Image 1 (spheres, helix red, strand yellow):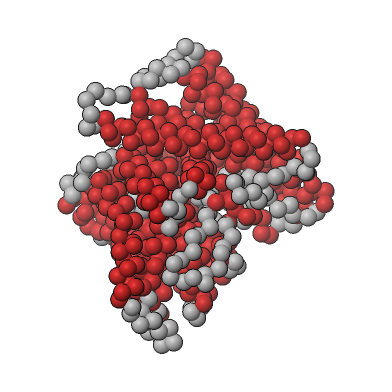
Image 2: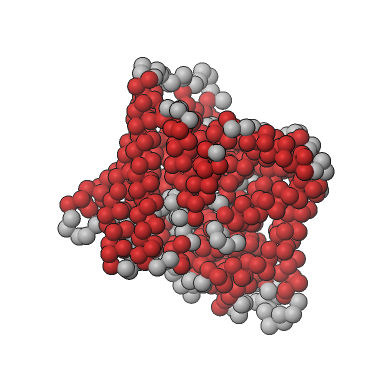
Length: 205
Length: 425
């Protein structure tokens, strides 16, 4: 697992205690997830890796935006005048973080799920269960992407209340997030589920 | 009929390891298509569920918790607790609870506590001769203090759904969280009476004083966050941002947050925010469908027909929520169940603040029990102790937690006294 994988650090490695110097290092929980699903040398692997990096960078930047804008909101209370748009953009940034990171989470099996079946189903059955789930996710995300397009075309020209940002700009990120998630789910079918069913061995994902 | 099929499909998809957000979204979209609604409505409801000012506190409290665990801050707390409580008999068990309590004032999620400091606590206890199951069970149980003690991420979510003040709910949850801490201490004390072998190290006052001094600056964060909210200086969202910037400043001062570490902290925050928010968005769509089908009213008339005694109602709700917490991730369970049960609870004369504390406490217990048991799985992963042994260890503390739950269920003053004193209700 590469060091720059956020899922490797979602359950972070703990800094060593100054009191008990002989504490061993611990491997983070994310070590079980697999960021590189495709075989080495596969051109799509590099593309997916880059896409993941872009999503992580944008997601991180949006968290910084949320932090800064909420702090500006606090500061405004003690300063003359005021920008009504800070709270609004902070809220939209949170919407964007959600959808920008959704595809990346999908690629790393990082969405919250009950994974009890992983412990007792044989590999082939587990592969079939995963295949079904990934297909369902791909279809759902494409339907949501279409719904976003539908919503945008019906509300063309609308802007947000305070910042007067076109609503289309807000929702295009949502649509892209769903498309990215559908893409990753479809990819998981090819590189995880089908090999698992064929080989009858559990793929570490 | 469509509704029953939709709910059944959601449950089956949960069990088939489909991520919660998509397990909810898929059948809900099918429902909308069958009922002839546009998919644009689904998108509007999902985005609308996330686009909320109070919920902005969620990523910011996640950020505070991650900064605490990824920098030296959590370690300073652990060192101080170790030197202060370690000399007691079975002192490491008290350290375990004390660190979780200190950490709970900065972090609002049980998983962050378990993943961040759980492995250090358990490894240290095992090295000193504590049974593995007891050590990991205590770590799992004490990790539950975080999502109950303010600042609590489930409380932020409940407050946004129930339309109650987040600050008031934080105040309502403080006493139950302290009660839970005391109850766990009591359980450890009873257990330790027979363990004469678990003697502590002698007190080393100079080292203890030094460790306490090192732990003082991090303890400024909860003072800023909780003092700011309960004192009426900041909204919870603002307090979370101020707490986050304070913790980041401390990490810079300690030299434990270089550019690479900062990048990882923000990426972690973005990942966990997306995990939670997508479930919140999907649950908003489900809640809309449940409201359209008048499910809350149906549940209300069913329960009101079953009993008119608030005590019986609370007991039934507790049993139901514990089972639900075993099956669902707490955030999604909270989002689905609050709009249904809160109107009924209000009809029974139960205060929404007390009800919120009861719901959150119930659902958190599910983090320790199979099959979902999020905290148990995380601890199993970071300590390499098989998950069934973690479940067994946590089972030792379950009666204690259930007693606390019964206390907050049947003694309203435990949840309502502090908000009243602070003028928040």
